[in-house]
Structures are given as C-alpha cells and as structure tokens.
Length: 174
Image 1 (cartoon, helix red, strand yellow):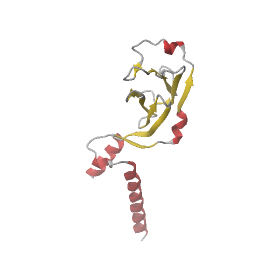
Image 2 (cartoon, helix red, strand yellow):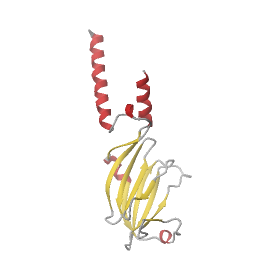
Image 3 (spheres, helix red, strand yellow):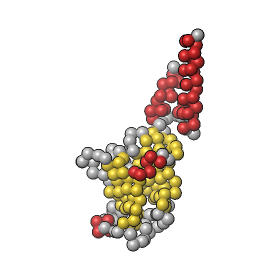
Image 4 (cartoon, one colour):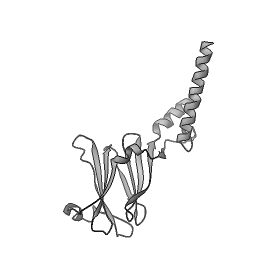
C-alpha cells in the first residue's frame, strides 16, 4: 500500500511538472525539429539591470566616426555601442548611446550581463531599436525601444531551448 501511495504521488508530481512546462512554451520541445529560442513574460527582477537616462553629449560620443555609428534607415538617428571591457573581471555592462535629434543623448545601460555572448542591437525601422542580451548561458531579455518616445514599448525574457530540446528528445527515446 505504501509503494502504491508513493507511485501515485510521483505520478501526480510528474503530471504537475508537465503542466507547468507545457504552459512555458507555445509548443513543447517534443514537437520541435531542432533547438530554438523561446520567450516568456518579462521577469521584473531584471528591471534594475536596464537603465535608460538622458545625458549631456560627451565629446567621445559625438566624435565617433561614421563607421562606428549605426544609423536608422532614414539616417536621422544613430546609436553607438560601448561593449564591456572583458579584459577585467565582471560583472560586465554595455552602454548604448542613442542620438535622436535632441540636445541630449539617450544612454541605455545593460548592467551585469554575460559578456561572452554578443548583445544584438539593430534598427527595426526609422525609430525602433531591437535590443537582445543574455544574462547568462540560457536566459536573456529582448526589448524594443522607441527612440522618439524614449521608452521601452515591449520586453520579454528569452530562453535558450537547447537543453530543454535535448531532455525532451532523450525522454522520447525511452
């Protein structure tokens, strides 16, 4: 009787775990053809690691040559990236300076992130920036920043599904 109770309890725990995991993905990894990134709601524990402010334009930012500026499609706005100095020990931070035809520069600081992974930054259109970074090996954040309104309009967590994919594949083989 005791073994039956343990087995029944284990069964319900597995069902509960499966339900939690199935809500995490649009489709579960057993249906994937290969590993993929997947997204979830933004975790507000990371909010303090993304700082946006207005700063006086520094000479070093304004003097950046044309090759270092990343212009928007209409060439009105641009951004410059200051990646972390990985020669020193972490935590590492990236700065993105955004020019939007104002008397100041918008400074986006990405604090305490994994430096070994490239932070992706690109213009979506004339005013929207897509920014994606990894906090560690499997967890990151992406957000879309409106350079004219000077605010984040959407943000979510990004998860590397490689490990989950491998675990589900191994489970299918049993």
